[in-house]
Image 1 (tube, helix red, strand yellow):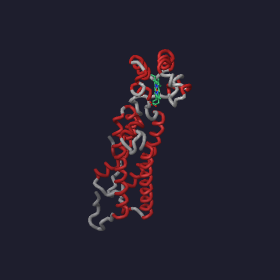
Image 2 (cartoon, rainbow, N blue to C red):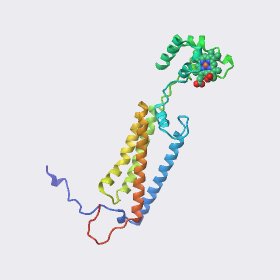
Image 3 (cartoon, rainbow, N blue to C red):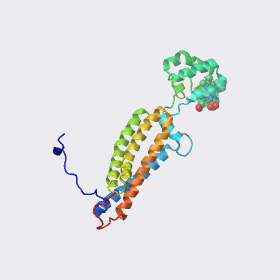
Image 4 (tube, rainbow, N blue to C red):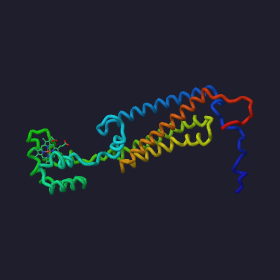
Length: 259
Ligand code: HEC
């Protein structure tokens, strides 16, 4: 390979550090980091208030995350009713009929053929507008459908929408913070790791959203990856801000004493 035509002499200078930056650059970087940090805190607060109560219990938990993406598939309101409070009105065989119908997605044709007769015989004395009770109306497919939907969480379509916005947006913010962070004076392995971490974290986080739709156990990955993103940004921002304003170079001792 004829390398000489494709390469040039490596610059012998050390990388730039914050103390090589002009005051104008320092002001620019500091303001950007502070705003980005504030934006991140705002995002956290927003996340908390929108996920907080999904599982019906206050406080953000793994269950909230799992239920948001995976849904609550332990069953439909109809299924819990025929196994629970309404079990006395129905025979075992009819119950398994309805359960099987629910599992197959509660199709309308099958409802007309085998399911509606059960409701008519067993349930509509109470479950109709005529009864005057405040209960779901089971005289039509639409009425039954209201308690027959399985909650499968956020739709794939809106997941794709949120994902691409996050990948573009967070990617750019990670680039911005990383471009400032590259001026820090740190052990090389630490600086490289911390530079890559936000990108790895956001990739894992968003992948885990999709995985959680498939299996709720990945809600843990969502939380761990989200935590890593926060941690790596917090470190990048605080180390950068500190070094921008407090790190001084040592004058005249040696020439290339960088890390
Ligand atoms: C004797 C009257 C009566 C009969 C018969 C009856 N129900 Fe109900 N059902 C009620 C009442 C009252 C409620 C509201 C209070 C409750 O949830 O216990 C209700 C509530 C429900 C709910 C809503 C539960 C929820 O999550 O809100 C479902 C689903 C249900 N019934 C299904 C059935 C089915 C299926 C049958 C027939 C096998 C049936 N019921 C028969 C009186 C009845």
